[in-house]
Image 1 (cartoon, rainbow, N blue to C red):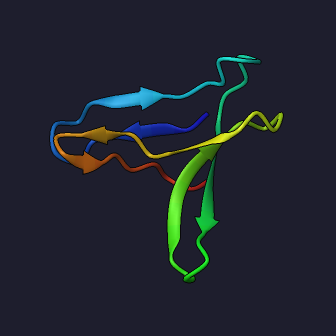
Image 2: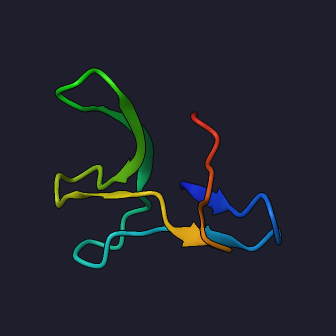
Image 3: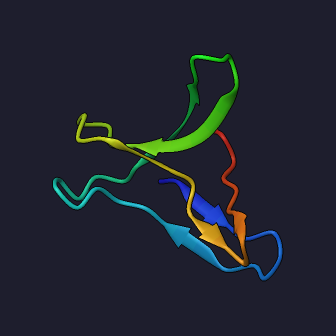
Length: 64
């Protein structure tokens, strides 16, 4: 399960898919310009999200 953590305050969030209740998997999305964005995606193909925000910054997640 992807666990995002705030580097400033330490809050953490676990993410699951609301459609199938499966834990989201951490992944990298490569944009058209070649830059990368850390995301979590549903292993059943229901979609993906960008990392959540906390304290005005993206929360981070270790890549499995």
